[in-house]
Each structure stands twice: as structure tokens, then as C-alpha cells.
Image (tube, rainbow, N blue to C red; front, side, top):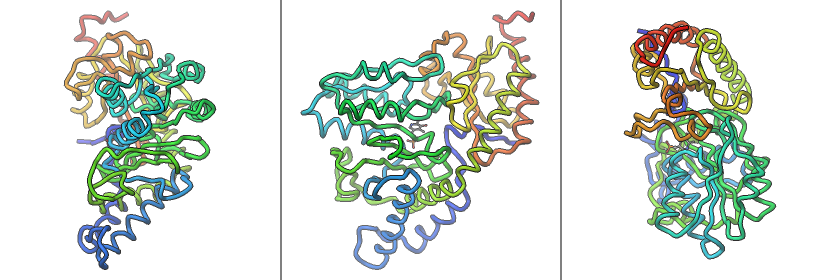
Length: 389
Ligand SMILES: *Cc1c(COP(=O)(O)O)cnc(C)c1O
């Protein structure tokens, strides 16, 4: 059977060159980068080269602004909790948005419930976009931190980060962005964007799982949230995941070298898939922003059917996608992101997310456009809600 992977928003295939770069750090240079002997120093050379690659990809000023973490979730936790706890004497108000990833939302809720912070959750428009005017209005005397994602993992909408960061800077509020979906798939420049902190994750752009990084602009104070050794300038204890860090560095290098071309290719495939779905299936709702959008993200709701049944039928044809109706979280609630854009529960339940990467090919797009209309029609025929016109 044909196998088509279009769930790159969940995770990506590890690039063979990434795996190749990692291997010697398992088998030969396996020393602890904190050790003084040759084995350790070889490992340290590797991790510091990787740090420099991360720095280059996001245009940080200094490699010391990069803290390695165990992935995007940890980077978000460290940014938000670490900043809030280090700066709580200055104020206890945070600002975020209703469409954030749970790594951000649940961290904010934790600080609200357990640590006495108050949090403003900014609404979004029908495209899932936050407004800079709403943001400006939400800033209070005691606001210390804002955290707003750059590219939405469900509907692909890109937030106006540069504009939001400018407002934050004018008002003396530190600005963090979860750029886990953006880094590696589109240009990200922390200095041009004007952000103070930024999270990224290796496995979302062909690096290994369980490794990521937090960019922290020089001068920003953070409390460590993992207590242990003096690694990462005492901001993140624990023996370095050397092979993982090497893999992340390689993924950054590959992204930096191939980005402009690959971004164009992936966007073209995305647009072909969007058009193919709109032209061949009726009663669909396009989700997210038509232009301000992640290169690989396609998200539609199909009226009268359930995203879950759609996923299962697609899987039988070898097509891997995902749905906002969160089977994954063990609840039957539809996606908080789709509801925030104003969709009804009923429509939101029929969502399908197809996310592309540099490894997808045009014939795979054709295959999905060939299979999907029939699957949707069959499921609709079984739906009591559907009356064929
Ligand atoms: C995947 C993802 C995360 C979590 O990253 P992990 O490395 O899987 O922990 C956080 N935010 C966004 C937007 C994501 O897409």
C-alpha cells in the first residue's frame, strides 16, 4: 500500500544527514561534555558547534543566548515559569492568547492557580489572529511577560510577532514566542522580530525528538526550573543530551542552507492541496489565514462528518493526517483553537489537518486529492446530518 505522511505538525522524519551526524557521538565521542579529558572535550566541541548553528538559524547575537532543553514543551515551561518566578517582585500579570499550544496554556494556568499570577488570554479573529490593539489594551502596570506563538500548530496562522513585540518593548513588557512550528520551515530572526525569548524544537524540522532550545536575550533573568548541576550556565541542570544536541545543530544547519528554496516548494504543494480540496469537495470550511500561514499547513472542516472517522478512513488508504477533535488528549472536546475562531462544536468536530514537509512530493498531493472526495462522500452518506442536495 502507498504510504503518505502528512502529519508533520506532530513530528517529522529525521533527516538522514542528522542521524549520520549524531552517530559518532554515541559510538566514539561519548564523553560527558562537562568532563576535562579528551572524550569530554570532543563532545563539548560538538555541542558548542551545535549551539552556534542554532544561533545562526535564528540570528541570535551570541551563542550564549541559546539554552538547550528537552524539547519545545520544556523550552516554553522554562521561558514562562523561569521568567515569572525570577521577576515576580516586579508584577504578577501575564498575557497570552487563547490559541496557544498546551505547553504554554497549561503553564500559564499553573502559574495562575498555584503561584498567584493573573493571566489575560487574548481572543483571536476568524483567522485565528491576535490583534496588536487588543494586546496594547491588555497591558497593565503589573504586566511582566507576554507569550504569543508565531505559527499556530493546528491552523497554521502566523501572528504579527514583529508588531506585538514592538508594543511589548514600548511598554516595558518582556516578550516570548513559541516558534516551534516556524523555526526550520520559514525565516525566523530574533533580532528583526524584536523578541526577548523564543522556543524551538528539533523534531518539528527533521531533527531528533526530545531536544530543543530556548533563546534568551542577554540580560534577561530566569530561574532554573530543573535543579541540578551547573550545565547551561545553571539555567538547566542535567548531563547534556550530546547526540540529540548534535542532531538539533545539524537540522539547523540544513534548514539554514536550504530554507528559501524549500519554503517555496512546500508552500506550492500546500497551495495545490488546498485548491484540490476546495475544487473537489463541497461544504468545506477553510481554517486559518489564507496568506499569513505556515508553509506546510492545510486545515479544513468537512461539514456533517467527524474528523476521527475521516482519519481512520484515510489511514486505510495509507494517508496519515490529524484532526483537531482531540482523540489524542483523551477528550471528545473539539479543538480550542477552532472554537476560538468562532466555529460551532459541530463544524469543529469535522476537522482535518494535513501538514507537509520537505519530504512530501507532488504525486502524494495528487493521491490525496484523488482519495479524499470519495471518503468524505461515503462518510456523509452514513451521516444522519447530511441531506444531499
Ligand atoms: C510540538 C509543539 C510544542 C511542543 O514541542 P515538543 O518538542 O514536542 O515538546 C510546543 N509548541 C508548539 C507550537 C508545537 O507545535
